[in-house]
Image 1 (cartoon, helix red, strand yellow):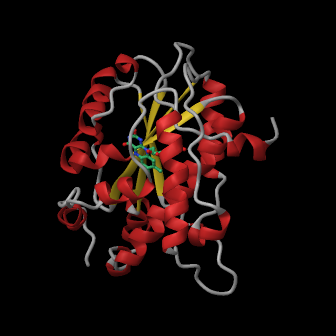
Image 2 (tube, rainbow, N blue to C red):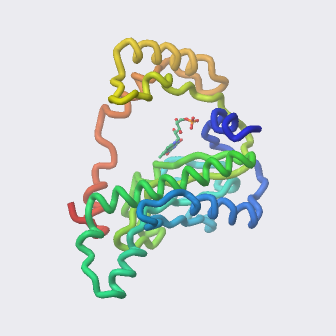
Length: 243
Ligand SMILES: Cc1cc2nc3c(=O)[nH]c(=O)nc-3n(C[C@H](O)[C@H](O)[C@H](O)COP(=O)(O)O)c2cc1C
């Protein structure tokens, strides 16, 4: 399949076959992640493969996301990482003041995300399926313990990667006119929202599993009805960031 076609066929995969990823493929996944652009070439991320069954179980519990009884697919944790840069500054006796800022944190989260999505695109191009797991942030302090995360690191998300045992229908995205502005920002109008709600309601009703009476607006409202992961700032401060 053409890469473009493969990309438009993306759906998150939450169940995998027993087929293991070869070591060669695993290395290619990491190399594809590392090939992404990186702000000022800082390469401000680390990837942790979870090979230990007990750790995987603990992380799946934190994320409330059990996958194939912990047996299939590989789980990678993507960590925004400025600790490497702290090592460089420390070796040179430089101040870390500007490493601890919100801007540096944003840079590291962006680098991490670009690396992950490069890996995701490569994985899908060779027939693998992936699913991001933001749920790992449900208990940042426990995750820090499990992964032995040093200061100036922040686990952004996990990613399951494996050979898909089932595939969902593609979720219809917002129309191009709702996301692309020309010269100025394109506001989402009530008419655009209504029309997209109709489209997504039809998708949720018709899909072959987990059908729901809902639409995009309802999903958005549900998401922002109550605060989530309210100790993120506390965690980041403990990790050495200064806001
Ligand atoms: C950063 C991030 C975190 C995510 N976390 C989860 C998660 O914890 N559990 C889950 O089931 N899906 C998770 N997803 C998958 C999204 O729900 C999914 O991408 C979205 O609903 C669109 O569906 P699609 O990927 O099948 O097109 C996450 C996606 C992203 C980008």
